[in-house]
Image (tube, rainbow, N blue to C red):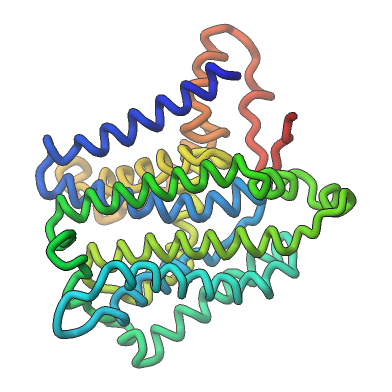
Length: 338
């Protein structure tokens, strides 16, 4: 067990070290692409807390992502760069407050009803920005000046924004890793495995789930803030069900139940998108990139039941000649071992 834990830590540290060194060898396009992937990784981590950490399959995560993005634009002054020190926390807070309101109602349901209620709340937020002047309608709204901390930190340059995004990714990953090892995280794991048993032992599970839902919304709001700053434009599509489905696919590709799986899934999903969109590789078929993307995702799910995280164990099982069917099963609800 000690070896397993240390190998995971080495993998994560090596991955972050490679990301830190990447701007030294990459061009502008590569830096902007990996910046977008890291934003998606933060977004995926927010959903991983719910799905892998608590057993709550939310299909409205894009709403919190969009709230953070719109807050970044609406709170920024029109005549100069705003203060990053308060706009970023404000965007996360607004997303958390919306998550608190949504969770307070949706967590009273379970299973498919919970999925549909969260989707309904996300669609409500979508139509608020789509059909009212608040969000600029279908055209969206532009961010004229990117927030900064005076001359100390200006994120209008690709490398500076990349480094800032990486710092937030490391902070979010570290926070969730510590959270999962705390009493609160252990309680969430117990709820994921058997909520009725947790209630029988004296735990009131609703406050724990609501707290996790709110924290998840805040992290998604941070990702939305970064997305708005990167593109300088937000539109209602950020809150559409397509975005909620995309982030769910990311954590499935990476491997549900593992924080590093959210990172791997974000990279795999975005790179697959770029691959099938490339006219240099697929020619005219690039116009139908969604077909290729769908086939690739189906193949990954079929061949990698535990996601990319489970690939090394799958290889070791095959090399050792052991049957691996039981090892490769990946239910959303897993056993918690002492």
